Image (cartoon, rainbow, N blue to C red; front, side):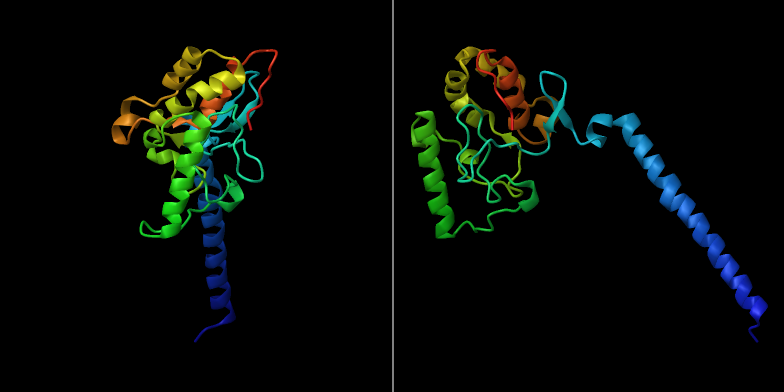
Length: 209
């Protein structure tokens, strides 16, 4: 038969377990994970933060920082990211949800191809696929080296830089090694635009958004 002493003993056991679980799972484990992250991969653990030429935090390398107006038109001074169904808004990350047989997707791709070709002064047939299709998140900071090269002349002219200098920045920011081996070579637009801003003429200061 249960007695008051028995209930108190069970309650004491439950409270001791709660205290133990709180200390281990609520304090020791999070601190261990945090400390391990700071020790092994501090850059990734702290958000993969990129810094500007002054050494101040500017943006995360994981999220595209597209310099675009409310209509979605991107600033010609910068390398453009992939199209985004979320208008590059981190609070509204989403895909377009358009299937491959959806006529609206074909219309969007055709319109994007024409817009890119006009902006870059190239043949529409040479516009890369990632320049006309949105990523799953709408915030992908990576573009293909081909798309970056298509934009080199425009970015160089808009910032008063030599085309060769900008092309060199593209090559410097093209992934290689294991990253490229596991996937494919890519260029981080956010990091590349910060490099362009740092290289731009002092008389024409650039701001990375």
